[in-house]
Length: 269
Image 1 (tube, rainbow, N blue to C red):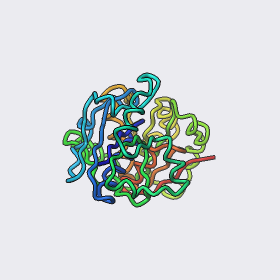
Image 2: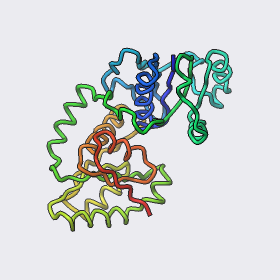
Image 3: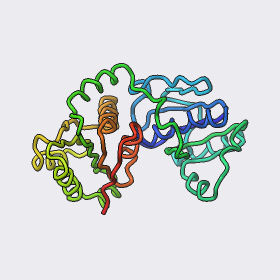
């Protein structure tokens, strides 16, 4: 059995769930996904998505787990790490994945082993890409209502700011303005669905492009359920556009495009 603990923010965790489902199919093995609320994502799975309906996959949606399954850190004195090394045949933490991949690690050895892993990313380019991840009934109805306001030639724009230093440095707002103007030159009727975690950015682009920019001015906080639900709706709406102009090194941009296989253009200097 493989125990997968998704960590970090929304799209990193969606990647992890996608990986878990894929591993179950790829290795024909049981997988348990332990979803928990943290400061990076203070929202239960069921508040956003339907249960995962796969025979060998169980997503457990709880606030607290036994110490054995905790992510080792200073706060728990790294005690879970010692427990995990005893209990499981293989233990892999998220920060170790890059080295494993670079060294051509054979993940197929996880088949028929007891494995514990924390992760924030998918490992395979041919993962199912979220076809098992469905909005719950409340958010699905909301998404369908809001999607009606997006014209068929709408282009998604995702501008990540706040605490994402790489996106701020390598995807400056001026480059988004240039890219959007180029899209207008190609198609005078084009409009943009703007998703951003920064209200000043939304106001700035709204002042430049006016009615061409479709957005809302809700604060999407990670610390409450409503904020996370708003973020999920933005993610789904971005993916429904024919193209996404995305931010550098942002999993939100990547997941939005992969969910519906739309074109992704990373704005990067």
